[in-house]
Image (tube, rainbow, N blue to C red; front, side, top):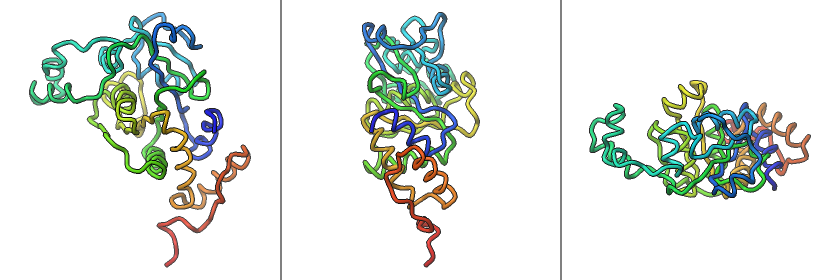
Amino acid sequence: MDRVSAVKKINGLLELDRKAIGVKLVTELQYRSFEAKGLVKPMRYCVAVKCAMAGQSVKIDRKTSGCPGGSRALGLIEPPEPFFSGVHGCGMGLYKSEQVASAVARSVPMISPDTYGIIVKPLELFETDPDVVLIAAESRTIMRVLQGYTFTYGLPTGMHMSGNQAVCVECTATPMKTGSVNVSMMCSGTRHSADWKDTESMIGIPFAGFYGTVEGIEGTVNAVEPDDRKRSIETALRGAKLLDIEVEYGKTYYARKK
């Protein structure tokens, strides 16, 4: 399976409203080699992610990253001492005490501060394999992605969820550091800045596990999808010549007649 075929397959399986996108952290030399729009003014990483999910290709560098939290999480800047001491997090009102804020800051997954830039674009447009695949959707769709991942790889490891730094930490840095999927319920910052739907969540998948996840989503169709969804999936994938299973109707595990 190649990236283009994988994107077509996952769209047929999940009927995604937003594009599955890729994210890659790059050096200065690599940054110049990727085709994407460079920014003329700062933009938050999570806003760039939403733009990519609408079909745009965006480049962010150290000067145009518009969110200190995202820059810190993805290695564009060195985390300052007030972040690790808990002064920053407690001062924002996110934690009961500086001690709690400090404990979180010292355990949250972050990328080493040697990133020059971030490439964010629809997965099928990437010139090479990205680091992480991001999917934003309603909870049922995220459930199906998790089922697909677990079908192939077993239980996710090192999952991290706090309701803070959703797109940068929970969906990008965490999968890169753990090598496993991670789910986010989003955070207040990205819901405000990027205006996601209240019902949307996000999942980050290390690219090394993406193809297996797509295969797993297809591999669980007969077990978990109701017959009406099976018909839609079969029509979409058969039309694209990407159907690799025999669709079995009346075999959904929770609807089988005893």
